[in-house]
Image (cartoon, rainbow, N blue to C red):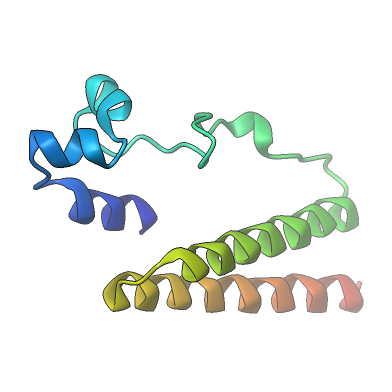
Length: 110
């Protein structure tokens, strides 16, 4: 959903807007295609997924991932002045909270 949102926001940028907005290096490599990266520019990779095969360990890792995503959405909301963008981010943030709660309930039931 984030990728679709970024695409919608950038697909009609002019060359000048691309440069002024700091998107020129990204545009050179990816045009307006969605290429998942962290805000720091590091590409997403499955290496960031920690799986041990132990249910409690893996669920605890999932809890941490949900909280990290929630914090990222909180940070985006602090920076966003576009109500349409903020609505999508709020929706995604709420999903992270529910996921966190469900993972926590699963751990407690074990």
